Image 1 (cartoon, protein in one colour):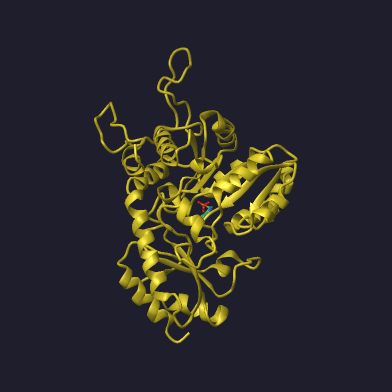
Image 2 (spheres, protein in one colour):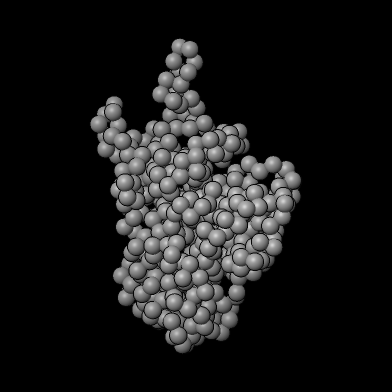
Length: 373
Ligand SMILES: *Cc1c(COP(=O)(O)O)cnc(C)c1O
C-alpha cells in the first residue's frame, strides 16, 4: 500500500470486542495472565508494552518501510536508547548540525557510558570518510538538519558507513516518512521526535526508533523495559491520531514554506534563507532526489545581527515566538537563545516552523515584522 493509505489505516484495526473504529484508549497498567502465566493477549505490564503503543509502533514501522519500531517517552529518550545499545569502546560520528540536546548528550553522558564521539561535516563525503574510525559503530545523520537545513546524501552516507562496518541512523523528524524514507536509501535506523510533525498539534511528547527488522529492535525494547523511558498510552493515542493526517499536512507545510521563501528571497532585511527547496541551496539536487517535497522548516538570517533578529521575533503577531515545531500553527524562534550559551548557531538566525495557515497571512505578518530592520 501507498504511504497515504498506510497513514490512515496502519495500526487501525477495528476493535473486535466493541466494533470501535477509533482505537480504544486502554489505560490498564497490567493484563490478565493465562493459567500457565503466558500473556493471554500478548501483554503483561505497561512498561513492557500496551495495546495502543503496539498500534503506534506498527504504524510508524509501516510508514518508514521498516521491520519494527520502538516507541519512547520523547525523541531524546529514543536517541539515548540508540546510544545505550552500543558496546563500551564504540565511537559515534555525529553530523555537525544536529538537534542541540544531542550535542549535550554526547558531551555530558557518552563519556560515562564508555562511548567516544566526534563531529564532522557530513555534507562533505571526504570529510566523513576521514572521520570514520575502526571503532565507529554508528554514523548519526540529520537531514534536513536543525537549524541550518543542511542536506546529507543518505545513499552515499549509508554506503560509506557500511563499508567501514558502521550503521547509519537518520533523525527524520523534519522530513517525516511522508517526504523521505531513509531505510529505502540504505539507513539502518530512523529516529523521530514524534512530538513534532507526527503528533502535529503541539500537544504531545514522544519519540521512536524504527529498525530494519524485528530482531534489530529487540535490544531497544529491553533498554526501554529496564530503563523505563516509556511513553504513556494517551501519548501513543494522540500520536497515532496525528499520523492519520500526516500525508496531507506535509505537502501543505512544504507549499507554505516555499511560498514564504519565494516572497522573502533577496528581500531587504533578509541576509540569507536556508531552505533546501531553493535552487541555490548547496543540497538542493540531493534533496530533490531523496525527498518528495522540502518540508515546513526554514531559517532566516536577518540583516543587523542578534539585535535585529530578536526584534523581528518580538514583532510577529500571527507567528508565535516559541520553540518546537511541526504543529498546525506557525512558530518563530531565535534559535541561538533557545540553544543557550554554548550554541554555535548564527546569532542572526530565526528558525521558522511554517504551519497550515494561509501563506499570504504568514507573509504579511513576516513583512510587517521585518519592516525597519
Ligand atoms: C525535538 C527534536 C528532537 C528531540 O525530541 P524531544 O521529543 O523534544 O525529546 C530530536 N531531533 C530533532 C530533529 C528534533 O527536532
